[in-house]
Length: 100
Image 1 (tube, one colour):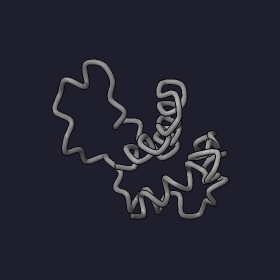
Image 2: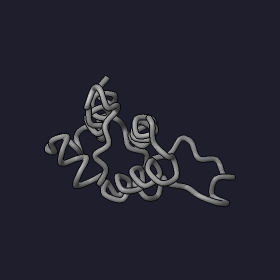
Image 3: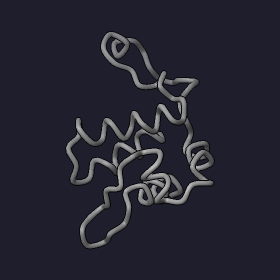
Image 4: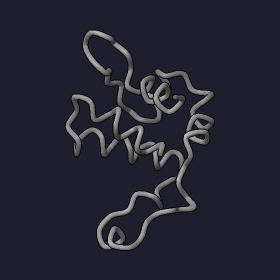
């Protein structure tokens, strides 16, 4: 679910392949979740349920010590905002969405 939330929020007004995929992969690498990023022939196999998926609680625990700016800049290396008006970091929106 953590990667789904990242994908959904970072997809807002962004190019999928050049922005969203990179953000999701950066977090997955940092959180050591690379085994859940399936590609190619692996996608034809049954993939759910998986023992190595990260719950939203685990996701929130993993980023708990990071401020939104640090999560955006150091981990995701992307400081995009949800809109030019709200000025909310997408990293903050990810945390809020996961918390809900």
